[in-house]
Image (cartoon, rainbow, N blue to C red; front, side):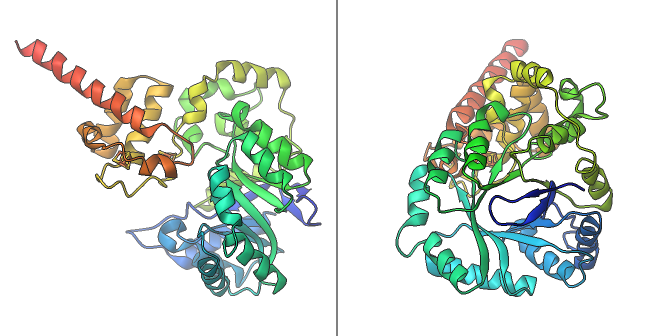
Length: 373
Ligand code: SF4
Ligand code: SF4
């Protein structure tokens, strides 16, 4: 495993990190010992960066890590998060995370999911989340205050210039790089550690490998190999958090951090040419948009809409029927309240997409009528 300096913290981090959002539940339950075994295996293979958050895996993830940390084979660093706006709530969450890990300090504490510059200001206000993190750092409960974000490259550039964070966690991958590159560079140039999440576009690349053959260099076995090679070959990126639920996934992912091969510039340009603007707008399935007052299952519609971007709208209908068993007609219920769009980490224009879906549904109904007349 290769290691890189995390910004100015003096810590050396494995280029492959462990993301704790994909532990596997069996019959709706997480076997903590089994899941902890996956974490320990990764650590034994050289992974030393472990990222989680309250709420991951139905709020079991932090506790699974706590179990794993009791017997970790090697040195490790933990990263967790709080998305609360009020300082008092951040403090409560931090203390609960420490208890769950059974640790005295969090190495990397993320001010979680800053979505816009207005949101950033909210986190920085008096009595807000940043202030609480600074206080906890003074008390030795946090080592490094960092932030996670889905902001644009330009917005990230403005945030890092304020010099208040030591690192950033951001979504970046081979499918959206032209749109996020600026944020990576700005953070690196300002001496921040750069942690990449969603390296495989929320699992889309391995899941639909047949669509992404064009990402491969001649010596890449799979599109997922190409996607990881693309990331680990960039010196600006400290670590890449891969969600891992099984030992097989650990063994597969750590290979990418062992022998790092360059990613040819010509290939990068070729891929860039093939990426349409829509590629930056793929739904990653993060489900932050849940809780629609109309009970529209927004993430399912948007994940199925990915198929329209990648293939055709017929595939949207196929996925809604066979994958989700959700009626596309649900899209008609949207009142355009905007709640989901405010929460969307990919800044997807959900309302417009739902309108488009409604119009397809109507077209199909008209076509059906035409056939029966
Ligand atoms: S904009 Fe539409 S889909 Fe989004 S939360 Fe409001 S009603 Fe639901
Ligand atoms: S629509 Fe946005 S918030 Fe919802 S699952 Fe997709 S990327 Fe996440």
